[in-house]
Length: 474
Image 1: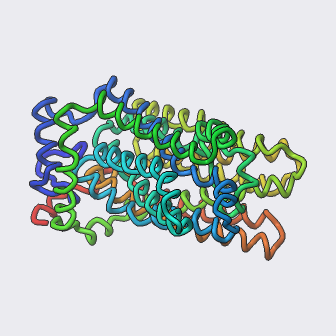
Image 2: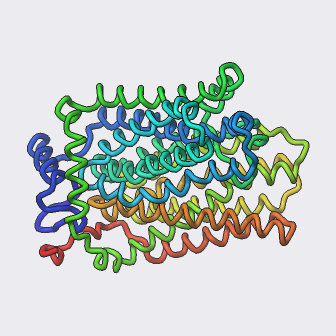
Image 3: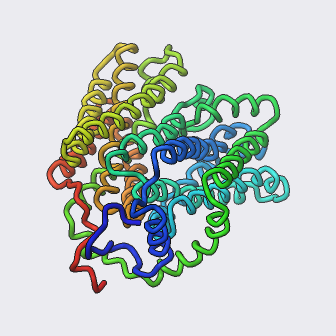
């Protein structure tokens, strides 16, 4: 349902007579024209989506946590382990756009729950099927690729859901709060340093990083998969039981098939939509912030280990990501508060982005200049923490611009950001090898962030661009 639509304006990414439109009409009749969650509903959904985001990362990092155990059990070398680990990201890039589009048509909550059910079952079944097959490397690589496909729809679906259900004046805090599930997912365990090469160093959640390590030591690698998968399925069950009606529980599969049909029949006016400068501004900014985030995520542990070899791993692996949790919540609260005080939405979005991309880059540059471990921790924590202000900037700006197709547009930006992230992570490693200095890496981060920030500051807007009377015949 297109938030804020009215009059004769038609959402350019919506089907006129699709199931989503029927659902919107029914909701408007039931709620007096207000399609948004009530305050109590919003709070409950926010908590559940936060847990869902955390569990997303729990399932995502089961293989990295068990990398050493799996390598020993199946006699893999580092290259084979790298193939298994990297296969996730190729699948992850393929479903973002289609996942976002289907979410815009049938509802993000349905796509979220269906994908979570699938990756939960996949995680639980992986140990069982691994013991049946003899082609362990092929199976695990295929399993990780499929995991990427299933999880690729999550954040575009989340963007679509929040754009339809959360008021503009509350979106920043809601998205930032849900985003803290990701921040929990960035806490790395020291044991992870010994398990995978730096270019495949992945994050662990507080839940799976602590409980998973204990389970791995006590009951073997299989228990980590069972634990993560069963928690995900429990989350899906609770969400369906307590947040969805009986009617909604039997609709998702039918809606999904109809949504797939819509995706083939509906003509999305790409030319008209992508002629809008604000659309390109938010996409370019999202490409920049996502790629630099992946770069810092991949190389910060190696930077600390090489620059400060006597430092405690748990400090630099945990502290910056813990700092990011309250900063994310604060950015959302501050953004919504300022908007409710009467400031223009686009002014606040740009202000948040200046902090998220600009100020955070300054601290990244300082990180490359210091020789003090304590200062390095402060600079790293500030840089990572302030990046969460992006949640209240470009991450919600796409919902401001096009709530009727926010999932699709978020998928476009996220796909590009992931691919550019792979390039930037590789380029950072190349710069380290050729220059022998970490300063070049942080200069790269600042340069890429600056491109995205300047583009957004010049061309960014917050007015809807997905409704136009000129699109009546499309």
